[in-house]
Length: 320
Figure 1 (cartoon, rainbow, N blue to C red):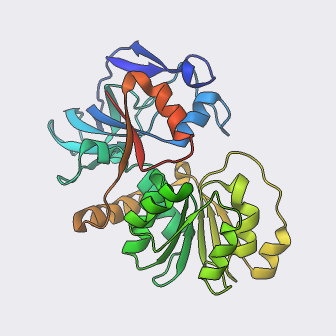
Figure 2 (figure 1 turned 60 degrees about the vertical axis):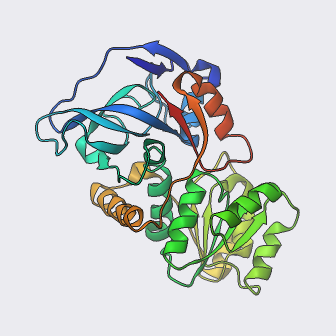
């Protein structure tokens, strides 16, 4: 079967389409014929060798995908033909035509969702759910600021926040980005390219600031987040591309909570709780993954360039 293989760390050009042996499902595992694969920013950091951990090479990237169960090992609660979305392969990644997945990391794909939408669930929706509710303690009626609300995690966070009765302020790039946010239900959409947009957040909250901030690019925004967050507010860091100088006194004077978050730290019970919550949202229609750009698997390098470019609109997927 074909898969993307990284044999040395570097730019998008190191993503090579190669022929590799087809994996087999063992006990408690399923072999999934993948129909769509999600691309996440962390994939690019791992590929470049700049993340806090480095995979052993050669390595196949990817954690999000959706497809059809082709074979189920002993003890796996799935049958051939089942539609599933998955989070992580048992070995390597999912930038491939097929992947073996632990049954505990495979979830039924609702009939109303396409495979492409299924590939947009694992990282974006679980990250957004964990940031809002586990990390941020989101409460109905509270105001949440979602930076980068037009990307895969951002859109998921918007939908989850709206379904939970939060007041949403979202940021995106340019007038088109703000218009996109309006189209997905954001009440207050701001252009983060405009000078002074952060102060507009204070205007919208009568000077009090948002009680919760979901931060996708902490190296750019964290200093301002500390300045505008509400008294006893929560800042949840979902993404960052480097260090940032901050004034800790801003956190002290407001009793702020600043919390980092990674899905790699989820416990199995927490993961089950998150995906049960997501299943309820897919069932009632409040959660609908939005797909942006699509690339053939062979063009994974272009997808990696696209996900780091400004102007994201929904999830980027690869099609085997």
